[in-house]
Length: 145
Image (cartoon, rainbow, N blue to C red; front, side, top):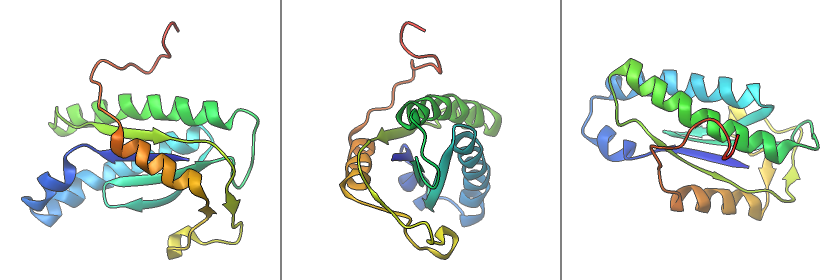
């Protein structure tokens, strides 16, 4: 499971025009979907400026945990790039990733708001995202890589 949330976006959007909020969220959501799918992830849902994605469902791979971590690193860079293009230099995200067993509902329709995965891993990833600190010095390369 991977959770990703824009840092400080809720407070900023409370003071913004809804059209301006949408103008930031549309390219952000599109970018997230592109990056997550490139690494084999599936977007379960967007919740405002947050995304919940699953790796290993509906197709499982031996390296799903690594794929999630690489997607997270790629998202950090892509968000920085998006912020520069949009003139929002302070655009940043927090990401939480957790692995473990989940119940997968293959017949779920996420576009209809139906949950696809269930289990404690979902809550753990969300909590990790909330506790994560944004680090401006992170790169898309793994440590030592």
